[in-house]
Amino acid sequence: MQKEIVNLLKKEQKFSDETIEEIKDVNLNDFAEIVKEIGKQDTDYIKSSEISKDLNTKYIGKNLYVFKEVISTNTLAKFLSMNDVENGTVIISEKQTQAKGRSGKHWASPLGGVWLSIILNPNVDHSKLPLITLATGVAVAKTLENIGVENPEIKWPNDIMINGKKVCGILTEAVAKFNTIENVIIGVGIDANLDIEQFPEELQSGTTTLKKELGRDGNENLLIKTFLEEFEKISEQFSHEGYEDILKEWRKRSYSIGKIVEVREPFNTYYDAYVLGISKEGALVVEKIDGTLEKVISGECIIKN
Ligand code: BTN
Image 1: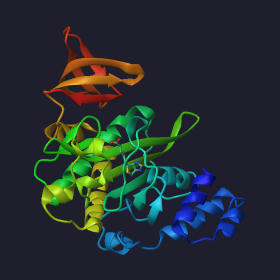
Image 2: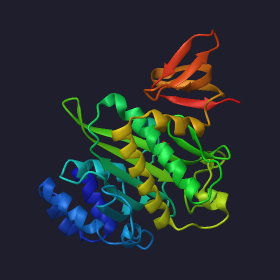
Image 3: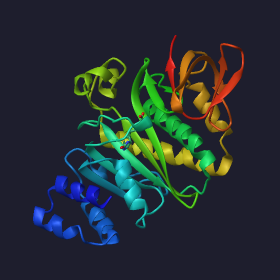
């Protein structure tokens, strides 16, 4: 982790190589303070001042750290979460060099997208993590609706789709100590002001961007602000009212229900099934070809029809 922070500082070009060599021996708490200090400045593209102006939240995004380039906002958020940060702290970067997608995949993060991570201290056990991911998906879908996207849909568990193509992914990671969750890192990547040609060729046919769908560049700071507000609303609902209404909102926007999919569970178990719905734990409920029902808790679903 220390090496990653050193790399981060290198990318920020705030420190000479000699200073970085010295910093390697600084204790991690001091490191965290240095990183926070760097993150207080606006970048060319992301402006904390615009995001924070009239931000209607109680705790989400009250502490914002913005960077030009990091390895991964989730990695940095994990590091900061172990070094005394407030619930609801948000890390944003213009670019990421080693961003993480689900199932160990790389996540393309060029300049123009919205790449952010929220540090939450939700006081839940591991079984609630899938629900947090689903709730985040609903917050992203509502955000997109607010900025004028018609009918964004959610493909289980965490892909936000427009016209059948992916525009956003969510990666939820837990920071646990002795089996107890200390913090949850919610990473969100939105393909905002990007052209399809900026993505690797193999991703282009399944990917879309807000710029393409709306036919114009959008204001990324306003997009982030709207998302943080939607996220806090849903996070409050999650803590105080339970998950039933959130699941209803998810089902209303589902891209998966009623489709035939190939379920790819960990350890290479693949099978075709019909998607019936999602359970109250956030699992995908499917009917296999032999008529048996299955709850898919983790894995991927490739849509076949
Ligand atoms: C997916 O595979 O669909 C999840 C992609 C999650 C990408 C986001 S971008 C911000 C945050 N930092 C990361 O390294 N990953 C997440």
